[in-house]
Length: 343
Image 1: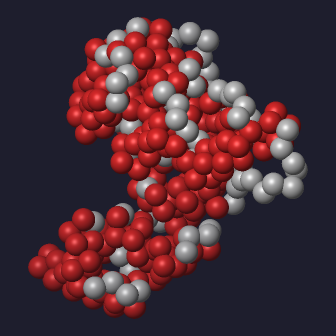
Image 2: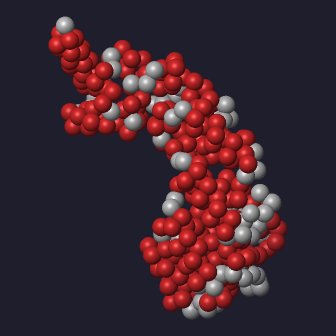
Image 3: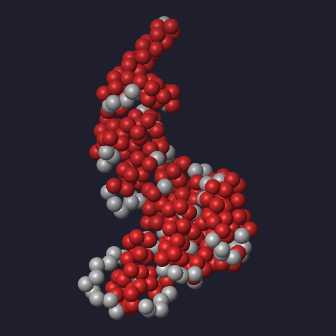
């Protein structure tokens, strides 16, 4: 009897695998992808085609495009094995309470489909409570999780708490600043303190940033803390030195406009500096007084504005030229309203 039982179980599993093979073929998966999914998720062998179809159709019904579903299922084939009404629907409904726009939940699932396999009670609720203790409003927490749904997979004790402690070590533990930093860049919570965040902060202090400077940079542009020192920060720093900026000037540039250390040299920094020096005839160190010069589009803002006023022989600073909207620019330099100029 026992042998017969196991024989029937094997036949049932084989039948289910066969039906799932037909399901995947019908959805356009190739053999390699199918085999890979079966290796990733052994539970697929016991899944009935009806359940897989029901889950697939439900995901499509909540706004996930059909063309994106194969990629989503390939990343997390377990989705097809989950109970629709006990697991997937409650999770989706919970996520919907976090968002304000209809497409946000579908977008979050597409980014990180494993979010559907995490327990609402065991993972999402504690995560919400953790962020609330940092002073982050519930609406902002919802935006963060939907923007970076991978947050739900991180351990609060061993991962998120370590990141928060690191931010505290930078002196950001006042007036809810840590919460504000995380809201600005939820992706920072996914990086390693020892492999990425600490080396970056140490590099910034090594080039002259004080503790206060580092705090300003972290609040303005927290994403800089998670950038690779050797690939981005060191080459950009070396480029600024090569262009003649002194150490203190580089610190002022970084504090005034932190992305200067991660912008493309070839496509962003060099073209702007060349235009400033070669076309405008200005000294390169003038940008120290207005580091946000590097924020403005060269062709959409800097070039057209300069061309409009170069014939007037007016004295102006880079801030006068760029730090205003179109209307104020026209008024400031007495230009005719008829000029077409993009902000």
